[in-house]
Each structure stands twice: as C-alpha cells, then as structure tokens.
Length: 284
Figure 1 (cartoon, one colour):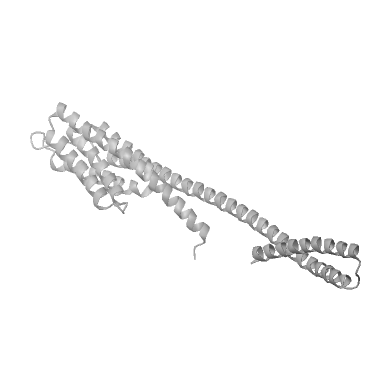
Figure 2 (cartoon, one colour):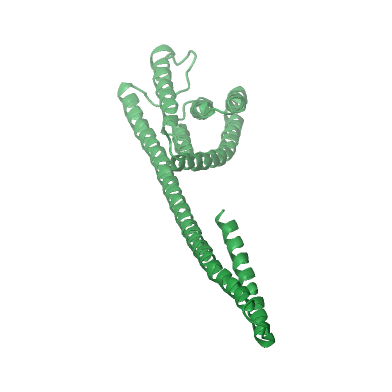
C-alpha cells in the first residue's frame, strides 16, 4: 500500500514530467519546421520537389496525427523518432548520396534527450541500421549499373567494413544520448524525491507545532477548570457563613458590613462561575 508521502512524490513527478513534455513538444515544433524547410531548400538545388515536399509533409502528418489521436500515450514520441530518421534518409536521397547529411540524425538523437526517455533511441537506431544496410545493399549489388537506375545512398564505396564502422559509430552516439536521457530522468526523480521529503518534513514540523500549541492550550484550560472548581466551594462556604452570621446579630452596622461582604463575594462567585463555564466549553 502506498503511503501519502509516496503518492505526493508521484504527483510531483507526474506534474514535473508533464511540464517538461509540454516544453519539449514546443521545441520539437520548431525542429520539425526547420527540418521540413531544409528539405524544401534542398529541393531548389537538386530539383527533388516531390521528395522535399511529399516526404516532408508525410512526416509532419504522421507525427501530428499520432500526437492528436494518442493524446494520453507517449507513442507519438516514438513516431517522432522514426520521423526524424526518415528526414535523414530524405536529405541523403535529395542530395544524391551526400553522406554528411547523416549528421542530421545525430542532431535528432541529441534533441530527443529532452524527453528523458532513453527508449526513444531504439527506433531511431533500428531505422538508421535498416536504412544503411538496405540501401547500401541495393546500391552496391542491385542497382550497380552506372547506366541504369540509381539508388542515392552514398557517394563512396559502401562495403561491409564501412557499413560496420558506421553502425558502430552511430550506436555509440545513440547509446550516449540514451544514457543522458536515462541520467536526466533519474536526476529528476531524485530531485522530486528531495523536494517531497522536505515538504513532508515541513508538514511534520507544522503538525508538531500545532499539536504542541493545542496540548499547551488543553493543559491551560484544564488548569483553569480545576482552579474554578476549587474556588467555587470556599466561595459558597463564605456566602453561607455570611447568611448564618446575619441571623445571629441585630447590629445595624455589622449587618451593613455583612451585606457589603456578601455583595463582593457574589461578584467573586459570578466571576468563578463564568470562568468555569468558559473552560467547560473549551474542553468540550
């Protein structure tokens, strides 16, 4: 069974991660806009409008459709990883195999760190490996006739050794970025846990102070109640003694003194009764 503290901690963490996700989504909007416009810009030089606009638009539709229809799921983030990898393949094709465009996927991998989810590196890695392996095979072994159809993948001889080197280097980048995603997520959880602990400690201090104050008030009220009870008996005894004494004398002066004493004693009795009544209401 989860404690109240652990529930509060989970609430804080969920709120923090939700805020971070919203900010990350905002950043991604600018990134995707830049990636799409880059594809359009490349189309001017290489006359690849159907790829620059067509594939770029499909990428945007895939991402925003997933985000709209899967509002309560993080699946759209995995689709984002695939979309960013497809943008890389798009640029390479548009530039007729210019290999430097592979760096766009490394940029994408780094950007995905903001979601603090290392698993987002998995679809990115798989698609890059499949893209490299598949297109390298097609370019070198299927469409290798200079006069025939071409696969625009690489302008260099992309043999098995080159393929393995690129896969290893790409894997290193993706693993490092995955590690930092995991690290930031753990750091966030530790930070939230610390805030939660400090919050709970402050609540305990406040509760303790409140309890001490209530305890002191109860002790004070008990003391007043007991004192009022102790005073009622002697005050009543004085009043009774005055009544008896008045019956034993005819001296007008003495009777006047008795009346004055009785009047002041009644005031004391009224005050004691008032204190006793208030102490009873406080205790109840």
